[in-house]
Amino acid sequence: MGDCELCGAMNVGTRQISMERAHVQACKRCTDKMGLNEAKMAPGLAKAKTGSGNTSGGYGGIGKKGKDIMVRGEKELASDFARKIIQARESKGWDKKELARRMAEKINIIINAESGKRPTDSVIRKFERTLDISLMVEIKPDENRQLNSGTGRGFTLGDFLLGDKD
Image (cartoon, rainbow, N blue to C red; front, side):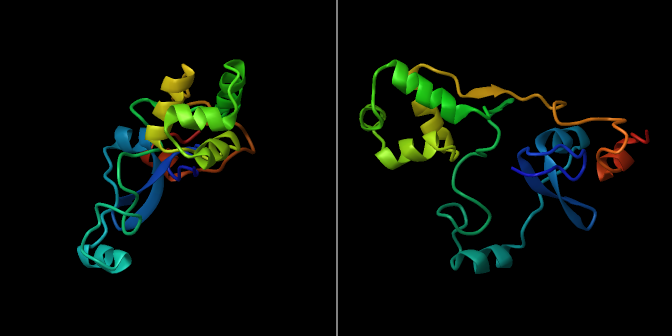
């Protein structure tokens, strides 16, 4: 989670995008609205970071293997996902070990998720399916953005580019 350098939204999923020669962190809403592309890494640099030519798997290079874990469609992980997991598990009368067994996951995955560490998308789907809960919520793009808030956030690149000069 980070802050969007274009619109000023705080604690949102961001991606590094390139604007002209600058690289900035931007939220999905800004990149879609402005038609921006993610910053590309030179092939030689990506190869040097991973230590091999394969940048599609593992944990080196551009990112983790798989889909973007910050946003799934127009939904994002609920901020109180850990509390929802604990409540659903306890309402079924299961301990952490039983939940791990039913999900076919290690108990450390359950412990980490219940302590607030964000699980992967596949584990989120397992939690939702096993506990019959929904952990993904609709994205509310304007909940962190305040315009004309006086001494709030300063003038951002997004204000300049989109023409919000108030």
